[in-house]
Image (cartoon, rainbow over all chains, first blue to last red; front, side):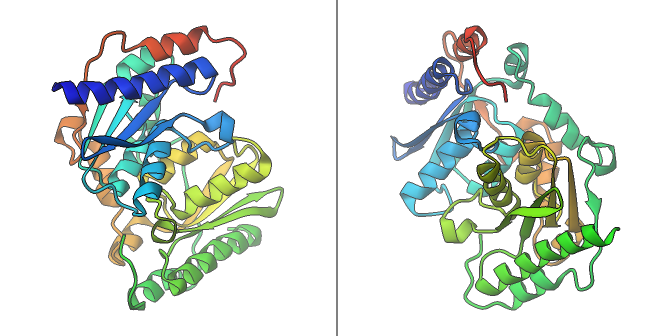
Length: 157
Length: 157
């Protein structure tokens, strides 16, 4: 890996170490654009009472806020650990240029953080998952989509 | 389905319809606790410049903020459409009692919202995905986990 990549990955890891020292989760992430860090994040689930406040989500939200954009075009995300499914999903929506990580899912699992459990859940069909979601049928249930598809001058995301 | 479930599902759909009318995404969600709606959310990706601001994430974050908790114990989530991988991941972290949806992934795809693409990406190994994440090895890369595991009096999430 180039020295630049290693530098930013180390920064994400240093943020994770500091977060662990503070008692928030041991995860860190940074967003880089044009060779500069534009946002950082660490796990703040328990501090913010927000189960979605993982390092990657925090960094993505902060970077988008700074860029005033809902896309991370031309940005690179560095994270101290391979993202969980929630955060990998967020990456697909934020569309950065590339993503680098340091700890693998197996390394994290060995240290007591087993995000592989959720990845394995995703491999099952809905009816076999812990969260087996139930459908509630309604009249005109496609109405929201119909309204959206007719709406003019909307921002596509 | 019971009349109560149908009532809350209809509320999530009504929020989705209103969101579509306003030009934000056609998705809505509500969180219910003890038979009462404690939080609502709709897609605000383009409005908030936050790619993670899907209806379910917005409703989960709002409900957790109101409960002052990072878990949705005893809560039920109703969403107008089957959640995308990001939001299903968030559900696994928020741990509500149950989740109900109205539009299936196939119904959403027929209307131009193909979250199945991301689910299919998740089924692939990392090296075959659009976002094929690259590992950057560092010295002492498990340091954040080691610090965390030694830390006393921490909140487990």
